[in-house]
Image (tube, rainbow, N blue to C red):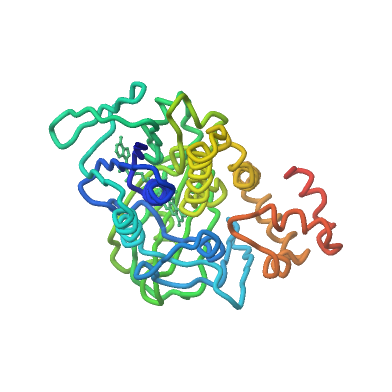
Length: 375
Ligand SMILES: Cc1cc2nc3c(=O)[nH]c(=O)nc-3n(C[C@H](O)[C@H](O)[C@H](O)COP(=O)(O)OP(=O)(O)OC[C@H]3O[C@@H](n4cnc5c(N)ncnc54)[C@H](O)[C@@H]3O)c2cc1C
């Protein structure tokens, strides 16, 4: 029996896949319903959806073809494609459809069940108002950004490993094919975003490593002159640290936000977390079928970790840059033709796929000093 702690997209996907691999799987979720509260802007890459064969079904809200990225004083970079590059999804419906798939495959899902502790193969849980003991050979922590399982695995974190985010929906006039990203001094260490659901509604948010995030949100919406009413407000942490080296301790494993498997440059963690769930499923499945080592989880994670490291470098590079420097950098990269380059090669999940190619483009060689600083 494998116990998966956390009924977010990563835990639900993993539980279904483990059950398909022949493991009896139980999933524990502390809330009384799957999919709530929603702490997500719901933007996921089309390439990730295709690669992982995810079925978006009724959760698909909008299709995105490009991004407009603004420097602190509004130098703009525009990246666009003729085809859809990303989807805006309804996270509650997406999680609910993963839940349905998991249940159909035979996963036992226990709602209102909170993991308190694990000792060897015994789980101590709170089910409603009662304490209970459960047994599982392996326990996977897919319990999100404030993971209890992370502590049990012995991973230490510090406040600088997270940014604080605030998001709401607003009515207005939007270009439904473009997401917008704004670097601002009041969004230190991250940025603000506008993700359209339609021409009339967008998800507007901001995350920052310093100061009060709600004040930063208010500044952003007044600067953008959003006048419609705000609803579906939420605030949460986003993990932006590098994935820790130890994701396994004895019979315990970490995956998803709990394991910092998020893109530090954008905060996106749905596709990367599910990719990591596939890696863990392969490791557990390999052990089950061929007695290969469970630590093969690390080798299966290598391609993902390479990308996560690049995202982390991009995040660090940008967050250390002052406002004027960032404006100048935007001008320089625009003049060097980076937009055209990204229109052709950009990939929101896999920066290594285009960072390497950039070196082969003579027009981009004038950015060598910048590239050296980045490296
Ligand atoms: C404002 C914001 C915007 C975002 N926008 C995007 C985006 O546009 N695209 C994207 O890809 N990602 C985005 N993310 C990140 C994305 O939401 C996460 O990466 C994703 O939800 C991670 O999935 P998960 O299953 O690992 O964790 P979660 O979705 O957090 O699920 C963890 C689950 O574990 C449960 N749990 C926790 N502790 C326990 C316990 N002790 N016992 C039982 N259950 C427990 C929780 O209730 C929860 O249901 C955003 C995050 C934020 C905060």
